[in-house]
Length: 132
Image 1 (cartoon, rainbow, N blue to C red):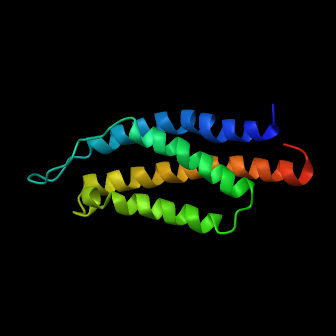
Image 2 (image 1 turned 135 degrees about the vertical axis):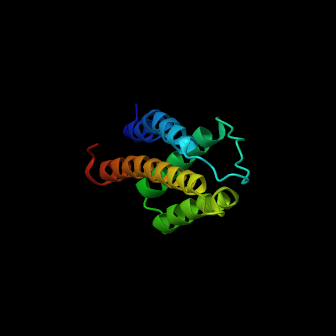
C-alpha cells in the first residue's frame, strides 16, 4: 500500500474518529447554555452534514499541504472564515448560546484543519526524505 494512503487514513479516518465525539461533547455543553428569553434558537442540526464536510476538508487540506500547493495556508484560512461567516445567523445576536455555538464551530474547524495539516506534512516528509 502506498505510503500516501497512511497519511490520508490518519487525516480523514482517524481525524474523523477524533473530532466527531469531541464535537458531540462540545455541542452537548453548548446546548446547556440557556438562550435569552424571546430569542429563537434554531435546533435544526443535521448530524450528517458536519462529519461529511470534515472528511472532505481534511482530505483537501492533506492534499494541499502534502503537494505544496501555493496559497494553501490562505485557502485554509479563508475556508474556516467562510464557515464561520456562514454561521452568522446563529451567533450574531451576541447571546451566550450564540457565542458558545460559534466557539464550538471554530474549535472543531481548527481540530479538523490540524488533522488535515498533519496528514499533509506526513506526505511532504515522505516526498522529500522517503520516510513516513
